[in-house]
Image (cartoon, rainbow, N blue to C red):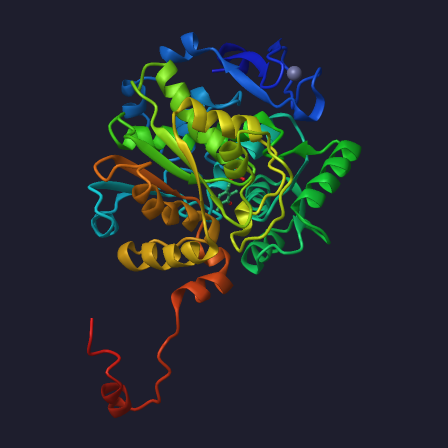
Amino acid sequence: MKLQEKILGYRCTICGSELAWDGKDRLTCPHCGEKGILDIVWNYDAIRSRLTRESLAKDGRKSLWRWHQLLPLDGDDFSDLLRAGGSPLYHLKRLGESLGMTELYVKDDAINPTASLKDRASAVAVARARELGCDTIACSSTGNAASSMAGHAARAGLRAVIFVPERAPRGKLAQMLCFGARVISVQGDYRETFELSREAIARHGWYNRNAGINPVMIEGKKTVSLEIAEERGFDPGDWVVCSVGDGCTIGGVYQGFRDLKAIGLIDRIPKILGVQSEGCCPFVDAVREGRDLVPTAENTLADSISVGVPRNPVKALRAVKESQGAWIAVSDADILAAIRRLGSTEGIFSEPAAAAATAALPKALESGIIRPDESVTVINSGSGLKDVVHALAAGGEAFACPPDIEALESSGYVSTR
Ligand SMILES: *Cc1c(COP(=O)(O)O)cnc(C)c1O
Ligand SMILES: [Zn+2]
């Protein structure tokens, strides 16, 4: 379907103004400026008849392009790009049992081309930049959006210009450099990094992949929910748990379920649990205290969610509120423990920001937010290989052994399970 068939226009999340689709992609509301983040208004009546269980059953693609009717693109197949989406959904029997839960799943989005959920947004952004004839795509990022965008841009033959705070973990930096991006390591925090990217993008007219601002990004990220719903037979369960930095991922998670409900593919939207780190939790604090968000220090080892000034607060708050979900913060120690727990019980590897979602489970059960008999899907948003320093801190020590069988046996290291 062409954009004019599937999109009616945009609606501002601040003032509610509607802008009819006029063939031009928009970033923010002309009345509200920067803060006026837009929703895409979908023509669900037109999409409903084209995107059905039957149409999905016929589509053999195991990538996010199987959802093209719900993506803000003119084309319907971009299989020449990197293959994002189609990540596995696993039932977590062992971890579930250890928590006293019966129905725990993980959507392992570390299994994406550049090893994070950001690939869903980057794939759609790069596809759209190419449709628009842009030759350069730019963003600021705590790390994953950047490494992801760099990979997808390389595959599409586009130039990537990236702004990252100097604290970005080496694994992510290595990816973006090897993908041939122009990488600007900003001597400042993420807020300052974002500001510099904004000025440079405005000056040069590059395609803007900043997830807080460009409404296309949430539409890419929402495909994680579309997949969860489809893989679970169109019953998405009681809860979906995801970690929150800028708020774009959680906004996308909600948007996906909202779309499916609007076109009649699911009957209910799961409650969404937004997870932050205690060292940087502007959403959790604001909701608990019933006030607006305030700039917060970025003080957690979970770099991908170390976001003191979230760029998508409206959509994130709405996701939790309208789904009747909840907010929770976990400590860095909980996060490291969760990396090891998910790894050792299920063989799934998380970077700290992703492990925050798993770390929230014991706390959410204890405080009665989640009941043990509820059906819960945790999103693993990024791979442990992204940040080996913290993975090693979580993993513990290997046994240093001389090359001698007697030394191994007498240590007792391998005689217990
Ligand atoms: C970006 C990211 C998040 C948070 O997504 P936001 O859109 O910034 O809220 C969580 N986990 C990982 C691994 C990420 O890269
Ligand atoms: Zn507005």
